[in-house]
Image: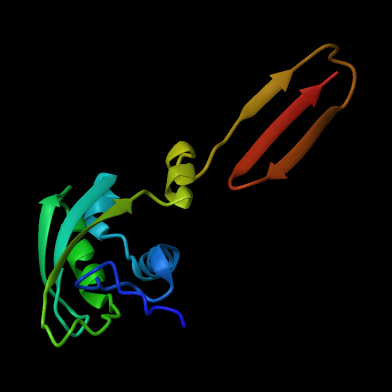
Length: 155
């Protein structure tokens, strides 16, 4: 007859259902970049410490290291949305403290727009005249791409 094994941990810790990858996906899907941080082009990592009660709900949050511009408040909002599973702990109502890093990186679309001039010119006009011989007829072409061009070429 086999002996029944005892648990190595006296108090079992809460866990996010699906593990760390599911938690990262949840944060990635629900993260909304603050508009103040987008305008200032702020990037960085927010370190947050939070408390989980015996029911698996986040009750208290504290920013350990923040970057400001609305990112800290967004990190607090995300952490308070998390729900944890807490195994039964010998009828004890324990609270748990955990910490998390939330990375704020500028979207790639914004980085590409930064390189390209965001305001195109309203209209561009070029007058280009070249003459080689005065006896031949002039050729006039009009090209329209965002403005008007008058090109006169004489040969």
